[in-house]
Image (cartoon, rainbow, N blue to C red; front, side, top):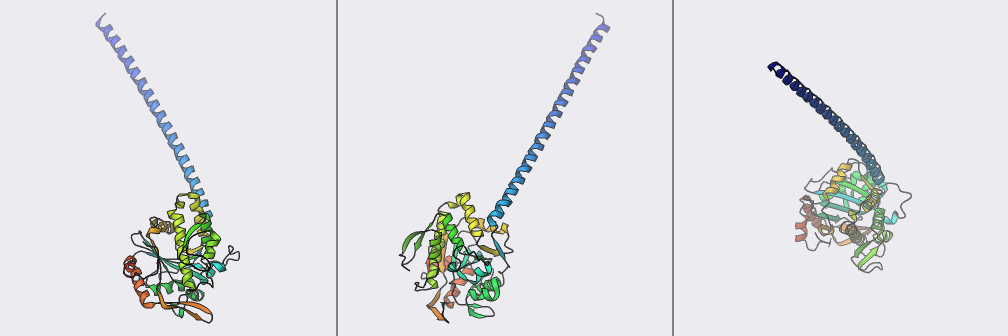
Length: 359
């Protein structure tokens, strides 16, 4: 074989190898392109599926939200007119007379009626560290100074000036600026108790034919339990004591009893509450959820119920109506502790305070 023939054969072999290399590269590019196309298609399908899932969840969430909270009423903004904005969160909860609102209130007139017939009046103070809750009861028949009107009850304030005057009266009484005002038709208690399949209440004293001790109540029995009755010797003070024992039983059944771990039970309790509750217009739903989240550590063990100090002779009657007289000097110490978020220290110094439970 001559040198020329060898070179030709070598050139042919090299050209064949180059062709094969080009074909291999083209094949790799085609396969890479196909892989890219498949990846894009998978990503597109994933994005579409994700979007459809999120849209479905959003629609279901909106439907659930309105179904659960559709009964929630709104009232004009009321708090923040007076008092010191101290540490912690303080909410004024006012509840209507269950005796006047029985049988589901088919003739319901809304939060205005609930506010005017105020029976339950509680200040809920969540400490700044969110680790303790103090529930301070003010007798609904307690005599307070209403700005611009003089002595009267919170019902008088509601009649004369609505939620704004009620909030301002309490803020001037306590010296603390309220964070929120809530108005509740106490028939919510009946529905919540039934959701919990009844609650066990520690009845504090023999009264109206009901002996002291632990008793299980269904919803209607619980509502009857906190209704003012002529057989109560201390009038509204006895009713306050019963209100506190029922609220404590509700907490025990819902929180300590583990009911809040059952989504259906939680939803039923939320619906029962929202259907009888009125909140201020500026209390947004995100704020509500944030406040509920801040209360996640609360149990009956770190919730303390106490009653505002009353006069040595607390009961008075005028024009056929019963009133409860407060002790302004002793109250001032309690309100100072509230302003400073030092209620635990107040209770340690005032062992004679009327307290249900302990923190």
